[in-house]
Length: 329
Image (cartoon, rainbow, N blue to C red; front, top):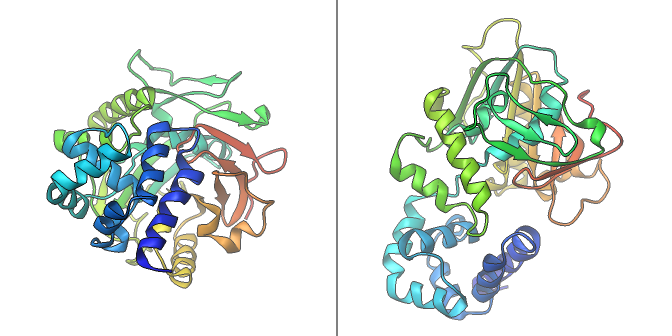
């Protein structure tokens, strides 16, 4: 397979696995990329890690707005290719989706309290505040006791309804790491996060804005470091007696070698009491093989290396594997 064919395959997979049924314009643009040699050649001139669909479309949008169709996308790259390339090389897809907290809550609420939370790949730290957001699980709605009108409420279709959390976890400490932490008070960095939201998802963009306000008001400490570094010190500042919870979502996919991914997973598990992982099943095949076949386009939520649920990549739904979410290793 040539590099252009590999890129085309990647964009078709993006359409089929991520945006079909969620973003009609990105479906159209993704298929256009796969069928347009001019755009494929532009992408082939970038490092493989920078050829991601989300990164391309966000960079184009950042430079010249959302193209109306494939022809407009090709024209944008033809006319503004240098600027688009510069954005792609200097930025990354740090999709800081706070709606993913709706997936964490059913597990966090079961754990021995209080909790020390640590997130790998935390971006601006928005997922470090699950106890400060509202949730709508259909028949079960949770709101913080002091919630005002500005608190975001994240909808999550959950099956079965019995696994929906009834209470909030008690978070005694929170922290995270990222190669390039984003500042929720920096207008340029906030604009980039908003550009990563798919164009049609205006309600999701509004919830992001509300979550950013909470992160600005109550920032969590975020270290600039790699998950490939030693992790044995990440809970050093956490209070004694807390359950040390380490979580991540759509992060390990950026480690290309399967052997290295497994080694990092082993180090993550050793660094905490509870490891919550929300990734595509293909990223962790040794865990995915313990579960039934994944529904199309869904992520796998696992706890301490055991699959417990299928999840929407951005937190919109959770389907338990079995009739409940357990937390035993």
